[in-house]
Image (cartoon, rainbow, N blue to C red; front, side):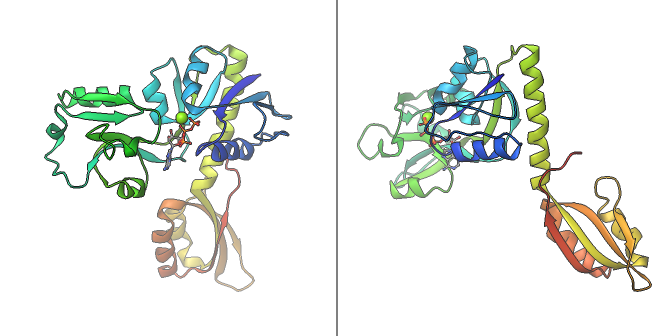
Length: 283
Ligand code: ATP
Ligand code: MG
């Protein structure tokens, strides 16, 4: 039984559960519980505050977990980063009052920085050779300069609108973050096997998300060029159409260069292009 800790409530909760469900794990009870057992896979979920997850893993109360990379780095516990999960993307930034003129990181010399990430800020200041006070607070960091608690803050930013509404501006990015799957480095072999099985499933879900199934009609003379452009997983499937000189071609295309390729396909004479989401992709 692999015990996986996920956030009890907050920004990571929904997407963490969604990823596990898309990986084929089925849970009966909802998020009001503190624990949930999958009924079709040897996994038990523990619902915890994200800050506590690295410690639980170090203490081997949990075997694995999903947290923001920011929490993983801040907590400095015996946790191994297993995989980046492509959600909860944000950055940890330093912000100062908008009226101030930022002259580079030396502006921070001798100032006071309010943050929930003292270890990360300490390391950042060290790399910049700057001495500044660090004032640790656990929430509502962005009001600290306004109430005279600090000169600057270091906090999570995604759109920047919270900073703006508190009269602050972002001046340094300290790190970027996304949700990560972490685990204890000392898992027993049977737990390790379950984790590897889960990881394989997660990879299939992630590749499926990054790729699309694409079908089109094309003139036979374009088949070779199109095959080179979208080779798919091994090679495209090609079937003759009822109309002489034409074929139906099926392949897989990466989400990122999708639009660029569509224009090229059209220029090769492809018609009736259909693009279909893939649910799982086993490469
Ligand atoms: P908890 O009660 O579990 O301690 P919390 O209030 O500390 O929750 P959340 O605000 O739910 O944490 O954020 C959890 C994680 O989600 C953060 O550590 C960060 O990695 C990520 N995150 C936070 N804010 C954003 C955002 N605006 N956009 C994207 N990701 C974010
Ligand atoms: Mg937290």
